[in-house]
Image (cartoon, rainbow, N blue to C red; front, side, top):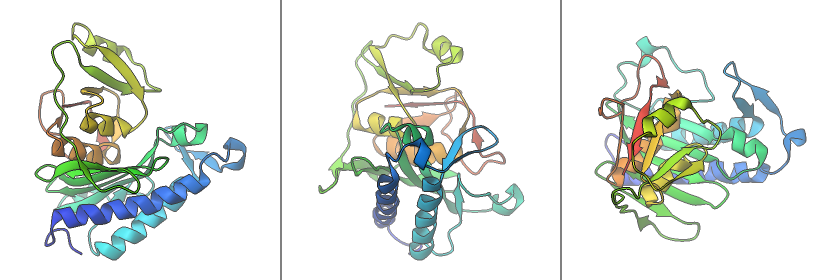
Length: 260
């Protein structure tokens, strides 16, 4: 299947199947405890486990089988240099285990992210929550849906919050003065602390309304979530209000605001 010539909805379904296969492997390794888990640390001091590696291999094989010839950039692989990739019209962005800290410490705040990026914007994305088996999927022009394990797709139509009633989604582990400053003077009902890209799922489902992220993230952390939120009628923009773009010279994101 080439997503350039096939229906994006079909591509989205296949991406979901690949994410689910990786999620099943993650669940089989979940809860072993740090003493039984091979954990190493990258240069930025974020953890990587053998589960990241196995999930990455499953996703890479699935994408190669069903989308031959479409390049892939993953958090757990060395990306091509910018001169090689700057002319790509489409490619996949993958985080095989978003929220490794949560996975290692036994929380549910981890997920599998796969996004198809076309002409520098996410065209379709899936986020799989391995513990529950629930899949979130969508894209601008495609709509978005959640698919609980054993159920069919349920369309997502979140509504903006009434004045002063917004739920703000923030990181479970990162609390910064910049965020406090950004929220100062903005009326909202409360905060919900959630790890990783799960926050995008809550936005699309209407369980949150605003997700300001002012610390650095990787393109693989946000592309699938942006597709999901845009499909649900929301937006993901930089601080100047411009739609978030991908395949930049640096794959590190600047600050962004996601909202419904």
